Length: 104
Image (cartoon, rainbow, N blue to C red; front, side, top):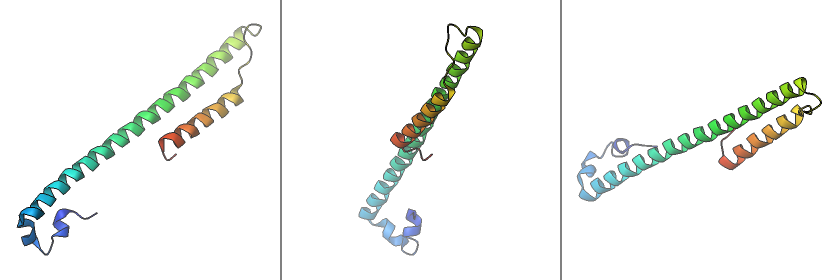
């Protein structure tokens, strides 16, 4: 994308026309808004990824806790299904990727 100086490179005198000055000012405002929007989208995606990672860690912690309980008290706690957990976590990550267009 060209900046304003590049656009008027050989015609700087055109930048002194009031209507052109107004357009230049408006263009700079829009560039600022686009930049802010890009920052917001990046922040939102970081928050989404952080949330996904926290959920995955919670699932892993729950699996470990259930394994420990099963080892201590096999008669009270059934053995956790790690394969099912992994499949569910993968499905969750893929669904979040699709919904939020994370590009994973």
